[in-house]
Length: 73
Image (cartoon, rainbow, N blue to C red; front, side, top):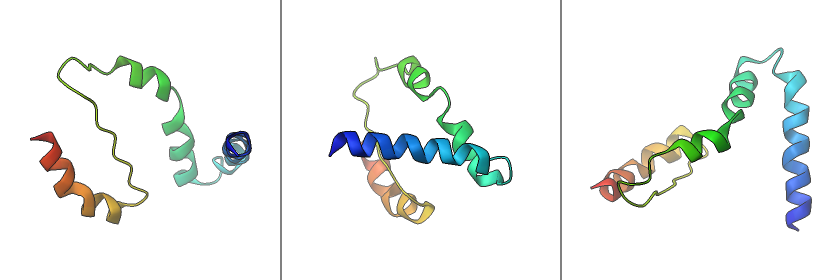
């Protein structure tokens, strides 16, 4: 199942490239994905463990914000 997911994610990215020419939101999504591996490797992990939270929407982020703040403390 993982290879199918991997292929579909890359196909979605390739299909988004021409759409990004006409859609500002899609353009932000495409440019936001550029260099993500490099940026993660540059993070300073010496202050403690890294916790990664995913929110698919602003509403999910707002609901999770108290938990994120609690975990930071």
